[in-house]
Length: 277
Image (cartoon, rainbow, N blue to C red; front, side):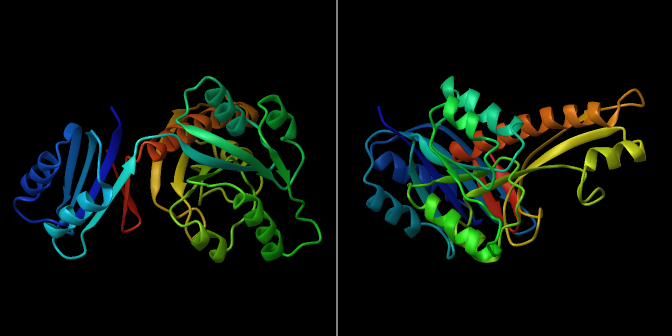
């Protein structure tokens, strides 16, 4: 039986779950699983359900909107593999982890292409038989380079863009073009350790934990809605290279978790934060 994801968010009021469930029942659909949450600070309601059965998407969406308060939002998404493009630069650990999971059918996605401003990662693309687009940034303005990147992305039907240690800052126009579709991973030292070799900076400061953060990209550098985070303890025995190795492992884990959450439509973005079921 086919499955779909229903996502609802709106101002909270009594009876919302009853009305939503009643409409779903009247459409002959089964709720396999559902989750709900109310943000009391903003009086905002969030609901996610997995629906079994054949759906008239337009009719169901229209009826659900009719019982929601003003400014309510309804999304109905067919549960199937999403199309994904990966952007990288030189570091291979995040990209390699994604590709291994992909080849093992652990990733609910179709990886359509890898795009990079360097050739360093082409060997990975070749091993996994994925198209590789090398777009050199030298002698190009940031805007001109991004135009070429967008041309490569737009060859495909893209649901998600993953920055797997892509080391170029994106312009506001690029972010707007793919709003809500770009996930980035970075070490959690920001903003304390900005710039080159954050692990060496952390080592010099004697940190006791290191970590990583995956987030949606917005116009503010590394300040988009956070999807996933994790940390690992370190101590005086660690060299900065040991810290770097541990940090890269955390980056892989956190990025992998964020990708899975996005692919399974578990994330709501609300006021630069996320609600995750």
